[in-house]
Length: 565
Image (cartoon, rainbow, N blue to C red):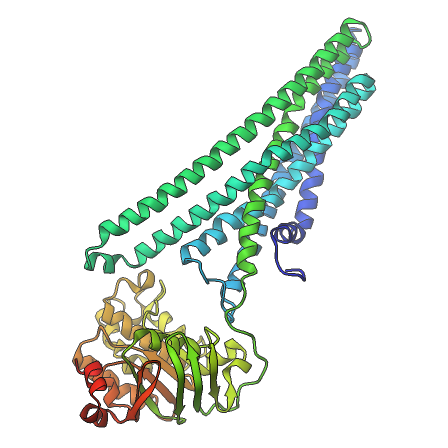
């Protein structure tokens, strides 16, 4: 985006600027098409005066050939210009979707703050399409203006009053059309806002369908969506009514204008100021003018809706990043020493913690919010309110978020799987050039999952891995995190849906696979904690106890209640 930050106007200009060649080519061809359309009534008038009126067969044949040539040119120009214009619109929308994807996937984050995933999807689809439509609509606007200009010149040659009537009457009509489009713009923006919110609610309900059924909350969820959907429908109807009123008002104004032109032409013909052929040409041009005015009405409506969508897109693109982009280089190699001093964020209250390189550390928190806030800070998803997190002596705040996450991989408890093969899901963390992911599959007990599937590791999973059970999804997600083999791995509750026998096997294999690399297990699983070098207990947002799993079980009541309850 240009300097100064994205705005709705900049988004629209960018959409047109990126497609200027296609838009320019489509505009020239569309202008040629409309010019030929405008000349058709003129040629018919000349045919009446010079051929029909005189009875000349040669003149009739000559003008018929001219008409045929005009229709050949206008039909060819229309087909090619329409193809160019639609291509420009689709390409512009595609470029906007790319810009939105780049912003949403920016390592600094922030684009999803206060927005449901479904709302972002609506912006990237419906709003991007509407803004892209300006690249398709602009050639039609230029062609309509060309048709009006050619008609005005032709009418001036026929009669100065008729020509001046068109030249002086069109600008006020365009200005009135702009005023009429303002309510449509406001209501279109509201319509897209409500539609995006409804899409977000629907996506959330579908994602949590099993949970909702499990707790018997289907009725409440349906009632919530019904209310949201009704609000979206009401907004859409208001926008549709506004569009209908806008189009109807423009057509009424156009009809009155065309009727005035026809009446003035008829009056001039009755007075003998213009010939019969001129009158036919004037009436034909008046009828033809309905086409350009309809095009301008269509374009005006498209631009009104596009301006509203461009503002919504600009809001996403201009979202402030959740974390700053540091410039310090990563230590090479990364040893994996973590040092937290006075870390304050959310439920964390001055947390101090030292993690030795290559160790396996368990973190037990009675407050799930404190565990989640710790993950957000370690993964550089949020800037801490106070204190520092250091990796090998370098503050995370000084590192680029992408670089920091390559060194510290945080595997959240609610990690999703993709609609792809099981192997592709595991390799997503390792890259195409990764070594064999078999050890990661075995360590996470995901090899058993693959054996139970019809095509093994090549079995395609459903969206978000819904074709697997909860425990199977957890094992595949853990295998993906292990396959990435980061210097520091932070895993949150990776075995809550796994049976105890499998969990014990995962605990042993995970420690073996991660030998020599730093691993933090944020969990209350006794099996996983038993395989750690040290366990720290968080209570009240800070470390209140530290020791081995057996020591804490024997001496710390809070730890026993959190782990063994």
